[in-house]
Image (tube, rainbow, N blue to C red; front, side):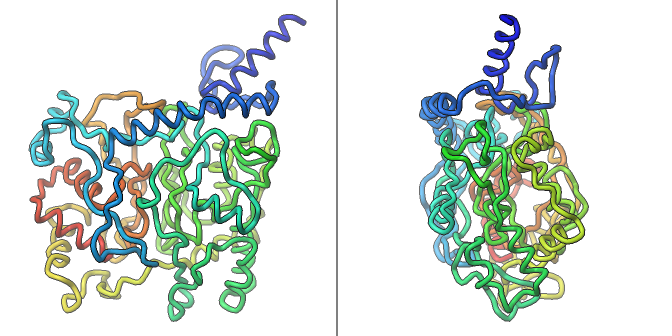
Length: 466
């Protein structure tokens, strides 16, 4: 009995160590494991007390990383806004290594940058605020809105969201429908929830699409938000909705860790992408290359919701969607979500209308399709090739651990559409780039395009009108 009791204590320590969901710790027979421990041996109050006590130091360490990497000040670009009027942030926010300039870096080879250790810190993969723990994490403005509408509290007692609000998308985001472009934004300035979806869409959508919206805003149990005692909400929880991350079919910047990689330190932070324009996309999931939005919809509640672990999902409340009706209804509505209007683009080929475009935008378009090499992966009219590409960013740095995240190779990532790109900061699959200015500088370095300062500004002007 003593040996068994000791084993149970050890399992409890493993389950609630800082690497709770490392999914690669020692198994009972030694070696590595892909599974999270299932049996919780610690009382919930003790778990909460311990994690709340650890929270200040966890957040302090991550804040230091963010401030070391980025200029986080609020500097909106003059006259440039998202669809519903939120100012777009301007300027390269990634901080340079001391004693270097962007021009000097661009003149070096990847090998030189790697050997000198001067790849900008903000260009490295971005870890989750507590990477060993991970899990869904929401901006405070979304937590407040859902609590006001539904009384459902998405607060985590162990972590706070990390990116300042001014770097995040419009809230609430606009909603444009492919079936009713005449209506423009149909959101009425509201966050769509289970409380208001019917009044917003009745008479605009057909009954099957309405059912799809209902399911997209219905809470279902999730890894951190559920009724078990290894949750991260104070009270037992109904769960999260698809639109808690993809709010209004767009994004609110919510973060998570991808469920398809082991061990934990190699899992990518996830920047929630918009659902706008899924009707023209042919790959889903940043690396999984799922072939339809139906596949993505069905799989997300087994993957994103429970770290791709069906054992944990069964314990916490797996919601197996019925493919013939539920999945298709959800997918059908997602397929209606359109890109925001782009009045300067020709509806035929997706390129600029010369009579409407500014000179710098026209110059930027030329750079995009030529010297900048952007159109290799992002061809018009939707600015995606619907393929996956490996940027091989690891050419520029030696593998290193960053707050629990092993920065090594990202691997192939799907090409996201650039239509409406100014509406969906931050950028890259893990949100490591806060502004489009950062994106231009990152691509200039990693693609070796050697753009001049004027060419960078022109390219930026073009991206802002897509």
